[in-house]
Image 1 (spheres, rainbow, N blue to C red):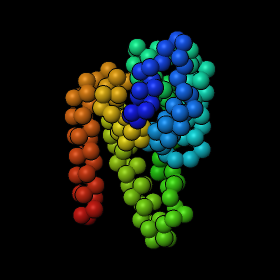
Image 2: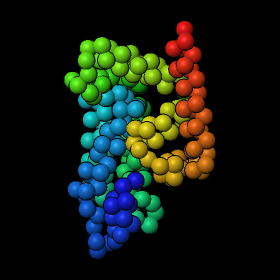
Image 3: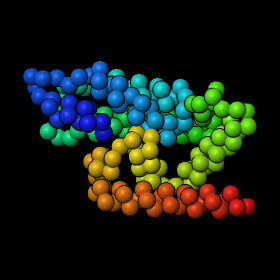
Image 4: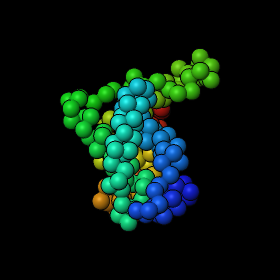
Length: 181
């Protein structure tokens, strides 16, 4: 977590409010990337990110700095927004149709290769269990530390690290196996 935001969230008190503009600027890309890992890039990830920050703003008086970091609180809201979405959608959004954000800067060949890699990774992610996908989304999409993920998931930081390590190792092995064919 950014040291400035971490310091800001620790010093929040009832008389000294959090700098919401700074917090929003810091967390917006992380929450968006988290949802990209869950549903792919695009309008849906943007909508879920917006819903997260709307709820956070509406509940801002409920945030208690002594119970956890501000980013942990926001990601708890984001996880709940995602759960609500999937519960009401009845089916998950396909990640293999997601668009790559830097398509405009890539050559046509590089775009095709990148899209193929993205689709391949999306297919591999779908083979994982929900817990592993969630941890990957929080770590690599949301940029959270093992400790922050542990606070969100009721796992120990060590357990989070072991699961992430094994999952990434498994994905690399499967990726290499499919590349050799």
